[in-house]
Length: 111
Length: 140
Image 1 (cartoon, rainbow over the protein chains, first blue to last red):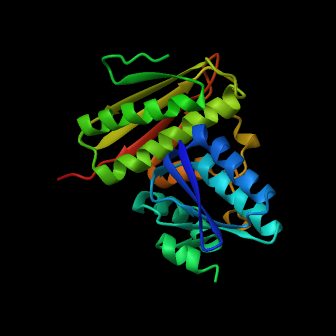
Image 2 (tube, each protein chain N blue to C red):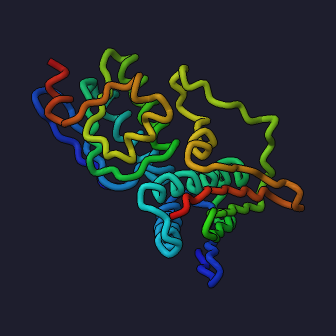
């Protein structure tokens, strides 16, 4: 999986591309943990390039969200494709994670 | 690493990096069987979760172990079987996830059930577990 990390208005934007499955979950977790450990706590993950996610991928995002929140930040999501969004709805994560329609909206939400 | 037989079967090795190849094969099978696109995604998730469980639990993360996946279809249903040869599934050890608790794991079977109409398992073989997933098909 390709993962780009960029900065936008003081927010760290993580942009994975590919399938977020059991095979990619550890890689995503390592990237997010490294960012949080470095104090980059305003995080947005743009999932526009992710067409598939499984329970391992979800688990990684939940763990990273908890890690970021415990450190005083958060991991916000944006640009979910319809199929991926349906998984967040089935697991009710759509209610507890901060999910935005566009990257601009997610970045702006940090104020 | 994989063997694609003539009867809709695929042999996956128990390593997470091979799951993408499985999905590619499933897409081909589902297209061949005229499964609607929006149902293909859910069935890929369901089969992928069963195989991930086999990798994680039946084989305890050990690579190089076989997982057999077969797909067959008729006018009224799709039947997908996943067979591993590792530690048998133990229903006593399974706890349904508490979705209100924002859990990090243990939601694989919950997801499977969202996408199929029937889910069963058979541990009567000498080794491993045979999972059967059934999806009813709407007529006409």
